[in-house]
Amino acid sequence: MKKVLIIEDDHFSARRLKRLVMDIDDTIDVYGPLKSIMEVVAELTTNNNYDLIFSDIRLVDGDVFEAFKEVMPKSFVIFTTAYDEYAMEAIKNNGLDYLMKPIDADELRAAMNKLNLNYSTQQENIKSQLNGIFNETHKYRERFLVNKGDELRMLYTDDISYISTENNHVWAFTDDGTSYPLPMTMNELEIVLNPDKFFRINRQYIASIKGIRKINLFFSSKLIIKLKGSLDDNIVISKEKTILLKKWLDR
Image (cartoon, helix red, strand yellow):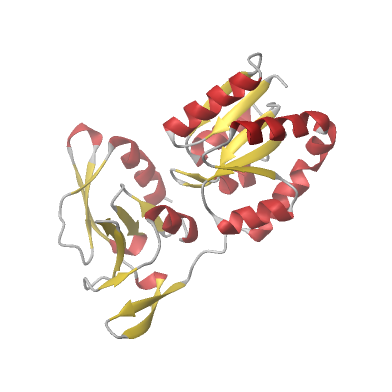
């Protein structure tokens, strides 16, 4: 094994994984990290000869399966993630390996040794295994059962303008500003919400495509976004997120 690619949108997770791989075999050339669907597609289109790919499931602009649908990896893939029950079940059902974050050094070594022992067989199976995952994932949430006073209500995702977090509580808001508590973290919501309809604009907000009221240019290539139902008119989008947001909107 000579070439390894890391697909990971978290800088610290990627740096730690690279160090662990190098500790196991310092002759391996480690490439990456790639942080977005766009970067993965571009890289695999021009350079699809890696021996092994370590891939997080959720990237900054969607899940990695979207990239793999466009360009199928020719190498074996070990998935790394901290959550996503749907994907984990699909990965196990299709015979692929995964490592839960934070990655344990001994488990990483075992996964790499397993691959070395069965490398030719694993390469032959990768296409059918990934296709199996494509067929089992993307079961996005259509609604949430939420509390409102002494009632239980159905909150449909199509009715959500945006989602925000404050003081470790997560709330979904409709266009008229009505709020509903959601018993999930923002990271978990990113997984279960359709990325064609929802975008994580910063740590505090997830916006619905229907919930965007106005977008203003800001200094240093940033944006200010205004959401339907929100009293906060100064939601700043970073330069990096601005690039991804524009691509998400311009489809």
